[in-house]
Image (cartoon, rainbow, N blue to C red; front, side):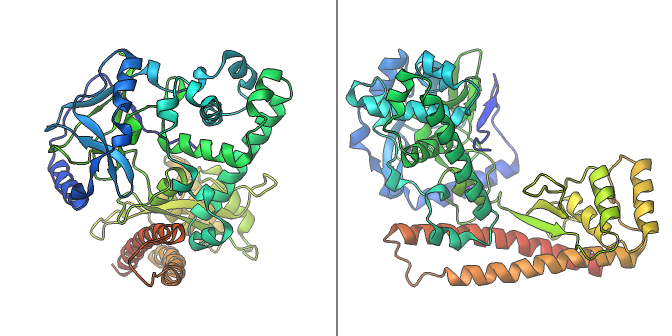
Length: 462
């Protein structure tokens, strides 16, 4: 739930050479060219790389330095870089993972809490040691709570700004999950004098902050979850092809350049193919135009539908997941994620086949139609209503239902975005920054909805 897949296991690396890669690199260059002049070397981190290399016993990077931008620290090219160059290598022995916890504590926690919670505890443990900690040069340079904007830190009024997005509910669930992990840890602390001494001063706010550090800076690894010092100073671009590679054979993580950089350029990587909702939940930022944006859309079979039970039975039997209610029983709701749809795409890629299938079932108006869909599914691959209905008027009705649902969402999104309009372009406070993040989130999701509506409208006409 909390961890994002940022590791690619590979022993080899190949430079992408497609036209798309070239275009994306050009866009990447344009996207951050305006901020390069605002970069300067972070004097506070001058000795950090030397400390890390001394601790690792090997060179980490000869090409990068830690720079400071308006939005925080980042990695900056120290020398000219060309595609294929190894930007950095960080051995496993200088990465923070659950097994870095004192052995007795790790054994006590066992499988009772997740890896994120374990590394969060490790951070709090090392913070408590202060200058005595062997990790102090790293821990002391992590972002402060006031610099973090993950939605888990937003108050009720701020969360109201993103109520239109599914991120609102995901944030509430995320907060609840963190609180449950914290409660488990406090309960386990009662069973160990050593452990209780470590966590006695830990508050829920401390723990929430440490968990956010892990979800925003850690990568999945063979050790569960790993924080990778120096690599985690790299900022994200959805246009970059550069990712963190993990080599179990070499016992290290490395980053290979996919783009040419001049000295002083900010070096960007891609954390993953993440929507703005995912970025805001786990990382605390959004992008003005995110190519991976998506929108959660929920459809419901009305309770007054006389064929409701037949439709639910058909959907659940043929691989269309129905949401569960708070008691664990099947409800009449279905949720799916829309992605941006290209108008010229005849197949409507971006609109999941399952949501179109749900609409076809929903618009069935007789037991005979439902039985026919069940027979068709059994005769093919077992998935129901994946083909256009033979009755064209019914096929159009199903897609007009979807179009009506999405058009309604578009109106709601437009109203929400209008309420967030800033009176000035100058962002001076935390609320202003979060309001702009909410704008980017909702604007991106609105773009996806409009692309789906345009395609559906054209499909119904033609």
